[in-house]
Amino acid sequence: MDKKEYQKSITDHHNKGSNATQEEVFAVLKSLAPGTNFRAALDGTLKAGKGGLIILENEHTSQLFDGGFWLNTKFSPQKVIELSKMDGAIILSRDLKKINYANVLLTPSSRISTHETGTRHKAAERTARQAGTLAIAVSERRNEITLYYKNVRYPLIPTGELLHRANENIQLLDKQRDIFDKQVDRLDKIELRGSSSLRQAIALIQKGRIILKLAEDLTKSLIELGREGTLLRMRMKEITLGVERETDLVIKDYTILDLKKSKFFLQELSYDSVLEEENIASILGHEGMIATHQLGGWRILSRTSLEDSEISTLIRELQTLSNVLNISGEKATELLGEDKGKVLKEELSKIKV
Image (cartoon, rainbow, N blue to C red; front, side, top):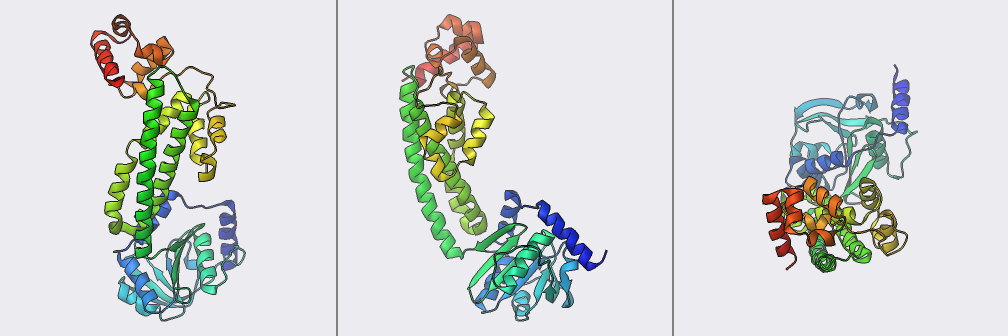
């Protein structure tokens, strides 16, 4: 196969779709985090007032290289900074341990569309898409570093700015968690009276989904920060602890559709869509804001020591949370056995206080 045929086959493969997974993007960001040699090389190139084009070699890249010279030397930030003085691309080994080539002309297919305007950025994006590899463009004119991985374009944010944003998001998460906990308390009071409230359940789901979406966005920044984001990562885990489980249990109690489908569609909602009560109600299978089914009580009963199978038995036999909360000792013993029945009665009495 000659070079043109190879490029056409790779272009055809690209057109079929070769998208990066979230895990792959996170792995790339981790390799570029502040404190790594790779990030030191990129930052050093930018500070030196130089531009650069860096490619990670894989099984598809060799057909896209023209000219340059072979180095096969151990990777170091200083070497990359010096080699960036030349116009061509720097080619690194996949494990980032060696600089394989320098001053290489990249020849990706022009059939691959790109919204970039600069020659260096066009070459980087097309190479990343065609070869399914990581390409990085350092722009001295724009004073920025842009990475391309498969179909993903991601501008690297300076560490100081990234830390500032992450701290702001942590504060926002903290405030949202306070509101979430208040929504939980409100729903508790309603349900422990033997009632249900679709509107209050939706309010809790909304806050839960917003917290989880904020945490998902923040995770990318924290991965990009590497060791600089360790304390913020710990704080984020503290703030979000239990939110997903509590939200999922509310969905389980209030959906009248397939649970997995309801959870999937809720996860797909944008920030704006999450704020619309009608969207949540529809995904839970309700036409209006009034629940038309009896509350089983998975969320409240999950605070006891019962197994899921035992909770399922109680809900199936007693139908409603109200009936479970007022279960007699004899009925609890009949359904769960003497020991479990006694423990359940004690735990429910504490929950109702």
